[in-house]
Amino acid sequence: MTIGKAEFARRRQTLMGMMEPNSIAIVPTASVKLRSRDIDFPFRPDSNFFYLSGFNEPEAVLVLLPGRTHGEFVMFCRERNADKEIWDGVRAGPDGVLDSHGADDAFPVDDIDDILPGLIEGRDRVYYAMGKDPLFDRRVMNWVNRIRENVGIGAMPPGEFLDLDHLLHDMRLYKSAAEIRALQKACDISAAGHRRAMTACKPGMMEYELEAELLYEFTRQGARHLAYPSIVGGGRNACILHYIDNSASLRAGDLVLIDAGCEWAGYAADITRTFPVSGVFSPAQKQLYELVLDVQLAAIDALRPGTHWNHAHEVSVQVMVDGLVRLGILSGKPEKLIASGAYKNYYMHRIGHWLGMDVHDVGDYRVGDQWRVLEPGMVLTVEPGLYIREDDERVPKKWRGLAIRIEDDIVITRTGCQVLSSGVPKTCADIEQLMAEARAHGPQQHLL
Image 1 (tube, one colour):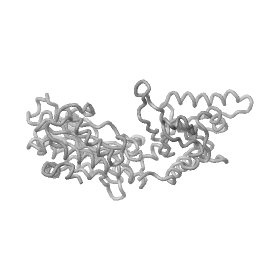
Image 2: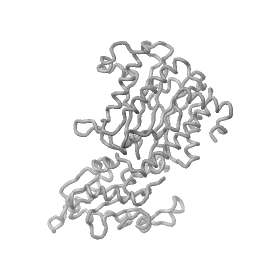
Image 3: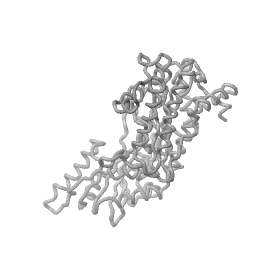
């Protein structure tokens, strides 16, 4: 399920083929982040760096030099160090990077200040993502300024900086077959976590206990990292779009919204389901839930190559507003309610976002002044939501405090689209059946 060396090599070759002649690309990995005192957060490599290298150690820099006689792919990384490896684990070292990651040249990262200026010198252009890491930005400028200081004795500094993200982000928008397999695996594991949470849920549980069911299943299947902090919001807490306290008790009669996904081989899943704590939707809950499901299904049906990015959102707004008028939550002509944005009191976010190595993945949504046209290999979420605050007296009391979001992960195919996250039930009947069977047989036994 992981990406192979040949694909990383193809990515580097593709990028170098798009670069201007006589240029250099410099791509550092992420820096280690301090959590508190002498404890760091778990390290995750920069997505652009990992996309091109597959290398997951800190303190590393990838350099691409199209046309270089002695090799176009150069890596800087930590040296082997027996004492430090006792504490922190084995390092690849420069020799290991040559063997395992296909680098043409590899040097100790401690020598980068001596070596990299020589690689930059004579190149006309530098491709680099300025502004992401101010400390590394200064190092890059120091290297260039050292070359400029020697112009009088024949040194040739680069004359132009170009934004590397412009090229890389467009590449990352189109997923290969291997990437889609990794995303499918992330979705399959995440779906198992959601099913486990549904079968374990009961009144009186704490939100964090339900979160623990997710984390257990993710970890049990080898997904050691979350794609993002899990949202487990019962009752009115689900009206907070990015609720992550997960500290309240789940009450009988309430709905609980879970927005959670794991990361697998560097790729993220992003799935949301809303279901009844007691296992059965009330009539009022079912009315709103089925509206949101209708919105989602209509939006998914609108996804196909050749349509533009915003089309599915426009469809979702139309179906949502028609439903809100039908239920009496909004009053007036749908076209006027859409034009005025009245629906945004209840559906305030867009239908979705790109998905890939980052949960909110890279890629422009507009090209020039036009919405981007969908093409095969693009992956996105579809996640309509309906949120009615507890204090909203314009709405009948039976619906106040209800929040529903349904989210799936979708890949655009040659003929339409495919739902990667279909392993989690989402109709009222299927959710109630799963929860009823778990109550009859026990959650763990039911999942086996």
